[in-house]
Amino acid sequence: MSAQPSTQSRSVSPSSGPASPASRTWSSTTGRPPSTGAVVRTTVLIAGALAVVAPVVWAALASFKTQSELAQTPPTLWPHQPTLDNYTTGLKAFDFTHYLTNSLIVTVSATALTLVINSMAAYGLSKYNFRGRTVLFLITLSTIMIPLQVILLPVYQIVSSLGMTNSLLGLIIPPAATPTGVFLLRQYMLTLPDEMIEAARIDGAGEWGIFWRIILPLSRPALAVVAIFSVIWRWNDFLWPLIVAQDESKQTLPVAIARFASQQAIPFNQILAVSVVTIIPVVIIFLILQRQIIAGLAQGAIK
Image 1: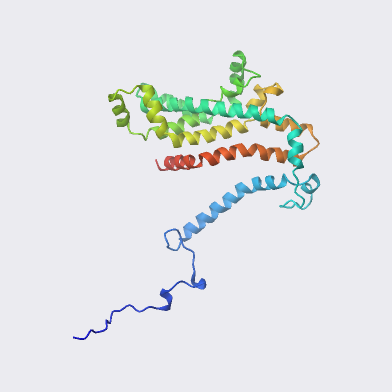
Image 2: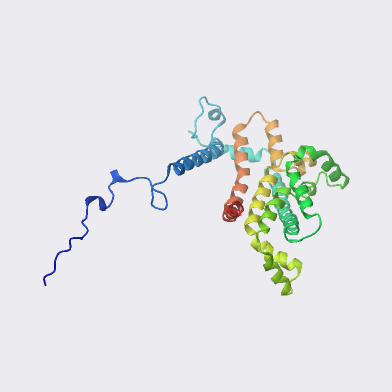
C-alpha cells in the first residue's frame, strides 16, 4: 500500500507566521487584547499618577534653577543653567543638621512607640473576649473623626502639667496611639486563625511569647503600612511641634523651614532645595518597605 498524502494536513498561511509590524496590536499580560474598560482604567490611573508626581518633579527640577530663572515668565520645566548653589546656600542659611536630627529622633521614636502601642491594643481587641470589647472598639474608631484642633487645648494642658513642653518627649509620646493604626492592625489580626493561638497555649507558650513570636511576625505587612503612615505623619507634622516646642532648639524641620521662609526675602529657590532634601528620607523608607506595604494594602483590600 502506498502512503496516501493526508488531506487534513494543515496548510501554513502567511498570517500564521510572525506578526508583521503593521499587524501588531495592544495585548494584556495574558496575551489577549485588553478590554475597553481595562484601557480606560489604565489611562485614568496613569493620568492620576502623573498628576500626583508632577508637582514633586517640578519642585526637584526648579531647585536647580537660579532665582531669576525661577521667576521667569512663562516658566520653563528644565533648568537652563543648573546650579547647586541653592542647596549649599539653603542648607547653610540655618542649622539644618540640628533640626534634621530632631526630626529623625521624633519620627523614629514616635513610629516605634506607635507600632508597640497600636499592635498591643489591636491584639487585645481582636483576640481576647471580654465584656465591652465592641464598645471599646467603637469608641476608638469614633476618635478617627475628631480633628486635632478640637482636642488640641486639653492635650496641651496634659502635656504641660507633665512638664513635657519644650522637650522632644512632648512631641513623641502624645501622638503615639493612633486610632487609624489600631483599626488597621485589628482588622488584619482578625484574619489570623484562633486555632494557632490555642495550639501555642497548649504547647506552653505564654501570652507575651505568642504576641511577640507569632502575632507580630504574621502581622508584618500591616505593621509596614502603619509604619509608613506614622513616618509621614510625624515627619510632616507642623501644628503640634509648633505649639509644644516653643524653644527653637527643640523644633523639628517643618517648623524650622517655615521660620526660615518667613525670615528671608522670598528665597524660593533655596526653599525648594531644602524641601527636596526633606523629602528624601520618606522616599527611602517607602522604597525599603514597599513590598510589605503593597502586600499589606492588597491583603487588607481582599480581606
